[in-house]
Length: 111
Image (cartoon, rainbow, N blue to C red):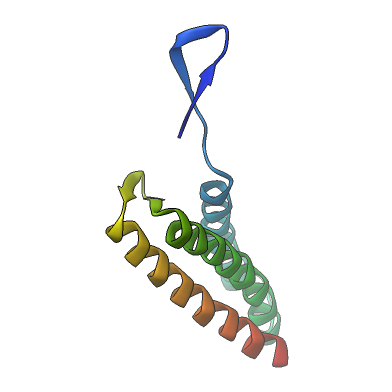
């Protein structure tokens, strides 16, 4: 996404989306969680609880991203912009994936 700067019309400012930032932070947090679990003496139950919280975050991000792709017909995944039918198909896939993630969150909460 590009946002025009009012005082310099020819130049554009690259704006990173909030959803991309959330997904990036999720990836970094997952790596840190696995390393912390390997190093620190924690139980499996604690690992599952923290992983459940992170799974909720990525499930929510995928749900919002998928719903927006289905409604608008515009999707941007891995720096590739899609429009029309391919964007809607990928949006439906994201919604289904988020439903599976949120189902796993419910299982994690019940543990």
